[in-house]
Image (cartoon, rainbow, N blue to C red):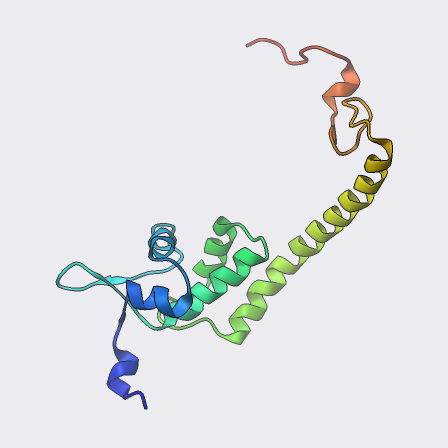
Length: 150
């Protein structure tokens, strides 16, 4: 059984790494990006509150969803530092990301469907291929440079 004293005891970076499955270097990186916070002890060693474990889990899930670290950081700024993120916190964050994920899924489905046609064609034409030359607005103006020299 874990005592109350053990529950309150801050974790070392190695303990956080072992419990979260995240490398120490990644934890240091997250800290430099402001995603997690630590306190320093008298020996200048990092010590983390136990709430950091859930924050790290949230970061890893968001990364797996393809959410950029900058957006994860913005979302975590909305949460208090002194407690673990709750299910309600996750609901708010996930609702923010759902629209973006749905748009990405739609884009990937379109890309997949176009890829099938491209495999059949095999040209990968710079002029006509919607995969190789997607959204080429300047190409419609013909060959050569289209921006005036500064």
